[in-house]
Image (cartoon, rainbow, N blue to C red; front, side, top):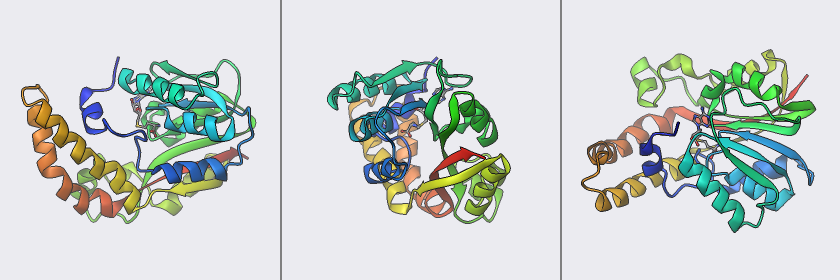
Length: 248
Ligand code: SAH
């Protein structure tokens, strides 16, 4: 049970495995007015940057669960680096179906709503760990503009246009699920570049060191095709945001 290795090749230098910059992640933490001691559950916590920096900056405590052994090890190392190992724990495992032993103040799934088979299922999953009145965070793509055709949607690594909504419709979906949208921080094209373009240098450096690796041919193709694909499709059409929700 692990994340396919190609992800750790592409995102080897990333601490944040989504289109947020450190500044946007910090802005979100500030926007939520977290109080010290707040208990957090982060499903698909990746390399743990959200939990570790918010533990340092806001005194939160909590647990991250992720299926990647590499990212989970990086998260533990980051906690040690930031001096927050007594506040945060990182569990390697499948987060789909994961429910906290004790209700938390903030339950998050940032960039992995497939663990609940989509936004609706993920809000339901997170709600099972959340205390009444707690905050939920969902990180999710949306269409900046509706792609002109299914081919363009697929070029954004979606299975089709129906995968995502326009931003107003995404916000309405949260409302329809019974939640108030109480905050949001959105990626922009520059922060998307930090996520996407940073992968190109990672792939090139990895290729230079791993010419004989079984993934080398795939990485070579991606490095050649990704920049134009990204500029043509994802950068133009795909937005991304983290939405803070409270049950009505
Ligand atoms: N929330 C993190 C990581 C987002 S990337 C961040 O924003 O930086 C998506 C993450 O989902 C990856 O770390 C991947 O390992 C994890 N993941 C994918 N499927 C999972 C599953 N079933 N259970 C737990 N984690 C999963």
